[in-house]
Amino acid sequence: MSNPKSSVSTTTQPSLQVHLHAKDLSVLEGQTVVFFSKTSSKKDAPAAITEKDVTQVFESSLEDKLITGAACEAVTFREANLNEFRHVIVIGLGADSKCDHEVVRQAAAALVKEAKASKFTDVFVHLDGLTGSKKDLPKYTQAFVEGLHLCGYNFNELKNSKTEQKTLNIHLVSKSAKEKSLIAAFNEGTILASCANFAKRLGDMPGNLMTPTILADTAIAAAKGTALKVTAWDKKRIEKEKMGGLLGVAQGSAQEPRFIVMEYFGAAKTKKPIAFVGKGLTFDTGGISIKPSAKMEEMKYDMCGGAAVIGTMLAISQLKLKVNVVP
Image 1 (cartoon, one colour):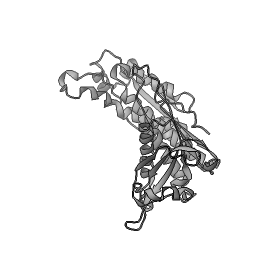
Image 2 (cartoon, one colour):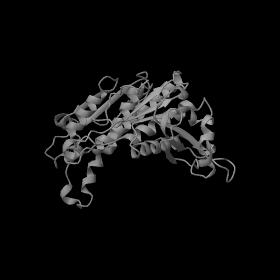
Image 3 (spheres, helix red, strand yellow):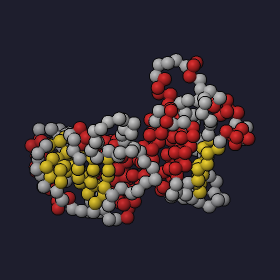
Image 4 (tube, helix red, strand yellow):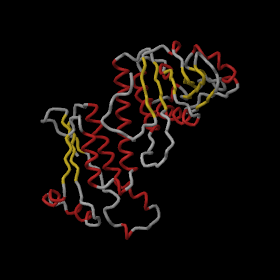
């Protein structure tokens, strides 16, 4: 099973793809395999590999503390040739008592960084090794998927390079991958991270390529195919609504202002809505002449509040949450 089709795109050339497979890792073969390690609860005791079948292979590395099991530790063994896999990466999760969603997200990020630094292109992860509890596997899977995609974000679409970027394929392998709870967790993690990356892209775009009109049109296009209604008020409508503050700021730019309205109704119309407000003033909206020049290029991030709300609304609509939300 590959990652679900999302209505948002983070880059023109994705550098990372995540797939879910209902397989037994022992019957697969590939370039690189990933196992997890944890620190011992006993002082000075060696760490342990969560995949017991291969613990003996790493016995010396564990005894010598080349593998400590510390959270976010990444240890690569090239040409290990273990179980039909050429290379091995061991990712640390820390102590059982301290392992939570954020630790797992950071562990996933450590894996992406290590795989990219090693120039690996196909990585198979023993997903069941994230936790000894089958009950906890879905929530940790969601966190792991989020970490993979968030770290995999790469704003490269404006680079003028003839070098073809290789895609990193990460295969999450679990015997439970056909279960609805795990599939739902995988999908939710993918959607949340994809929408967060979408918001990051809006902020990363330079001001001349993220004007008020472009921002509004991008939000409208991203909402297509969902239950999210997006309307962009033009200057005449903004004047009609007597939004003097927005009009005043817009006078500093040759670009016309836009006011983006996003509405989602996933519950009964009688249920009170949740309201989000995000500042989406783009870089060219005036005031530059009275500001210091240092770090002026970072002013493009002034609209990240609006970008965050757009990403949030997209996530809510794709997850089909039973709530009513308006900006």
